[in-house]
Structures are given as C-alpha cells and as structure tokens.
Image (cartoon, rainbow, N blue to C red; front, side, top):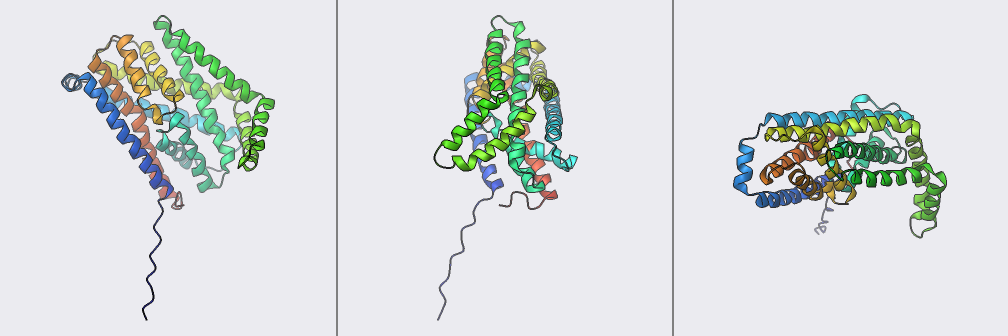
Length: 332
C-alpha cells in the first residue's frame, strides 16, 4: 500500500528577501515618479541638457555622498561608546552602519533601526540598548539640516521662516526627551493601554534610559557638528552637479535647496521622501535659483541617484559583506 504523499511546506521568505522586495517596489515607484518628471520637462530638452552635462561632477557627488556616510559613521561609533557598548570590531561596526542604508527608502528613514537587529544577531547586543541611537541620529541630523537651512536662507527673503518653524519642532522634541517626567508619563500611558502595552512598556523604559544618555547637552555637541558637516557634503553634491549643468547657483543657495527638500521629505511619511523631496527641490531650483525646467529636473534626478539610491546600493553591498563574515545573519 502506497503511503500518501505529504506536500512539503511552502518556504517562507527570509527577512532579507522581504526587505529586497520592499526596496524593489519602492524603486519601481521611483521610476514612475521620475518618468512623470521627465515627461513634464520634455524628453528632448532633458536629453539635451544631459548630453551636455559634465559627468565628472556626478562622480564627485558620489564621493561627497560617501563622505557623508563616513562622518555619520563616526557619530555612530561615538554613540556606541557613550552607551558603553564595546567589543564590536571596527570593520563589522562600519558594515553594520552602512547596512542600515538598505532601508533608507522608509518613512523618515526609521528603517535604519535595522542596524539594531544586525548587532543583536551578530554580537548579541539587545536591540532596546541600540535602537535609541537611531532616534538620536535623526535628532542631530534634524538639527544639522535646520542649521544649513538657516545659513542658506540668508540668500533669500523669507527663508528664515523655514528655520524658525524647524527650530520650534526641535525644541519641542528636546523638551520631551530631556524631561524624564513627560517621557515616563508617556511610557505609563502605553503600559495602561490594553493589548501589548504592558509587555512593551519595560522595553520603552530601557530604551528611554539609553536615549536620555544620548541627548544630554554634553553628548549633543559633537554629533550635531558631525551632522552639519555630513549633510553639508550632500549639499555640495547638489552644487557641484549644478556646476555640471553650467549653472552659477551659489553654495549657500544649493545648501538651502537641498536641506529644505530633505527636511520636507523626512517630515512627510512616504518612503524615502519619494515625490516630496524631488518636487520641493525642483521647485526651489526653478523659482529661487532661476534654473530652467530641464536643468532643474536633471540636477534633481542626478543628486537623488547620487545620494538616496547610491546609499541603498552601498547598504546592500555592506550587508552582503557582513553576511559573509556572519553566515547566520538574517537567516530567520
């Protein structure tokens, strides 16, 4: 008698496979968005501007973008030291930091908390200890970007309004984080809620202790300086690409265009600021920088490839190298 054949269980996708699918979906959405921009600018006009573009400036922009990653890695290392997290090899730490860029195309880049998952699986460091680093990174990045907007806005009338609004937002966040009473009130509120709140509250308390250590005035100065320098490099990337299109836009104006559009894309919860960052950047270049439609579209597309999409590629390369060093990483 023949035994009945039992169908093999369907293989479930791994974390990396799910991540790759999501990134591919966002990339396809980006292609559609960029196609709309190209149609709006006119293929002939855009093609003509790209044909006359000095392509060496694009590769210089890639180098500047990578310089941004290196400076922000120094900030990551500083935060690990503040939290007394030791024993992580420098090479692994660098690859872990870069691997977070795999999820750069998430709203507000919150997917970079992926780095905490990597450290947990490779070194057994609890995610609740390291996840606050991502919040502190975003906070100091926000301060750095606002500083660049404030400096760049001196080139235009009314530009300081952007800086003022952002400063108020940063101040509010700092007050909440600095006040243990307000923060603990929020954690107690979560614990009181039905469902998983009671299980989540202890982790939130642990995470807050790390976040509190990272956002004291004494630990904000150096990371903020690094953030300003890092994001200024990407502002320079836009400036040098505009030079490749023979535009005479100043460094300060380019800083205002790039920092303002970056902030807009971070505040609106869409993957990678897709559509928002591009629209704001292109509009500012046209209206305030007097860049023609095709030139503004070309510069916007190239700087987004040199920053956002280059970061995603770097993240996948870093993650691949890290998985070679730690074969069990992300298997489950």
